Image 1 (tube, one colour):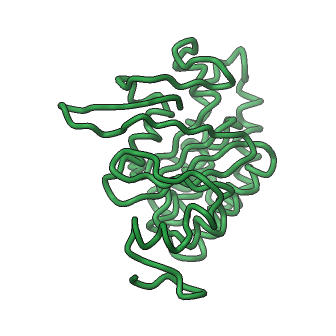
Image 2 (tube, rainbow, N blue to C red):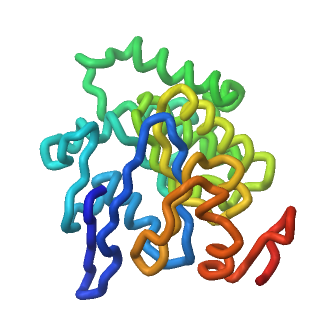
Length: 242
């Protein structure tokens, strides 16, 4: 992202955002509510396109890619996921391969991709069940499988663990980290600062639509910054009110 700014109804949402995201790196984006975190992710996902400035993927401007090409390379996992139809887990995951035409991935290859990610995310026993009968944690894994089934170069995830219990929080983040270690880039919005420090290679701190810090977790989330931005601090092993 190079000098990306966005105004909506004359209100400034983002100002001069400059961030380099790398493959094989898990980047966390943190900041107070309403600071512009989700807007950044939607711009990178090519959902919001009315910004000024430029975004490049692999040193090539977004405008030179078709939406379909970007959808193959960059997968977006939104915070709110509603699946209205009683689709099976298998079919929900298969939907993640919609950007790939049959001449690129035939039905046999698509079936192999879906079954492979079902095995990887330990979803085999749910494969033929309706996604609507699953628990919140199980549905989260299904949605992550849908986002990963196309083997994207980058995963964008908006608070993927915020509503989950500790087991599924760690489970989902470890699954993402496994892919990152294999070369995928990941950009994740997080509210849990402890998890951000533990899992992220880099943490971008956003406040009022501006990048305040962009560094390794122990630097971006040191006590000085935590007090100033979040009004909390570490007492040695846990977060407390400052």
